[in-house]
Length: 89
Image 1 (cartoon, rainbow, N blue to C red):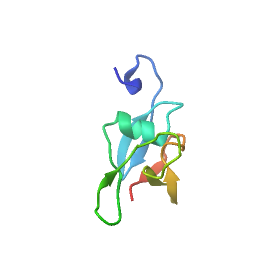
Image 2: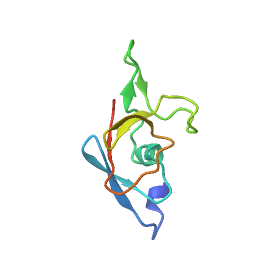
Image 3: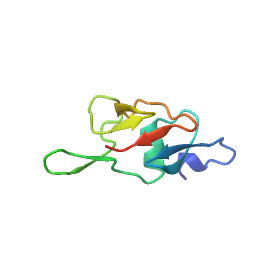
Image 4: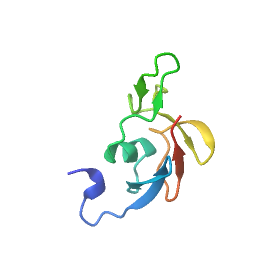
């Protein structure tokens, strides 16, 4: 059972590249994307290799996204908030 489907858990939506993604209070943007099945949201410059959640603690920069117009945010550190606009790189 995924965390977003616990009975009675309150939910809200963020938008990822224009699409709604369900989140629950306390989740980071990366956790909400991962729970929604999104595993990659950027690509490396040279080879175009997919990147997403890697360390999950803010030590790397694989999970960079733009949040509400602010680029280069580590999705694993940004708390998910209702109506947040998240875009891939």
